[in-house]
Image 1 (cartoon, rainbow, N blue to C red):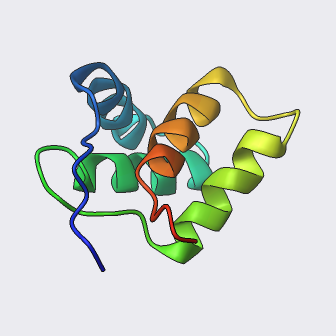
Image 2: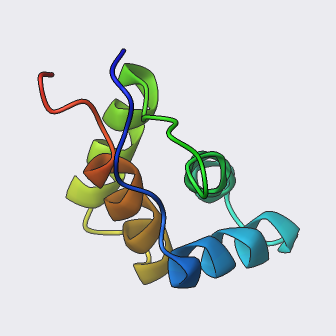
Length: 82
């Protein structure tokens, strides 16, 4: 896997941190938030499974704005060759 030159923004990282601490956050939101934080200040890249989850969340009309924000960040850091 190649190094990721993109990183999660501070704003999205803050949303992710709040999401992980929110007891009412859904499982998908927490999963996406964990991925966002793992890509903050590192060269980590989104894996194929997480990319698929994020893509599905973006396509789901019922996804909240928080979910879509986190999913967008995750997808933007995926492997461009997939």
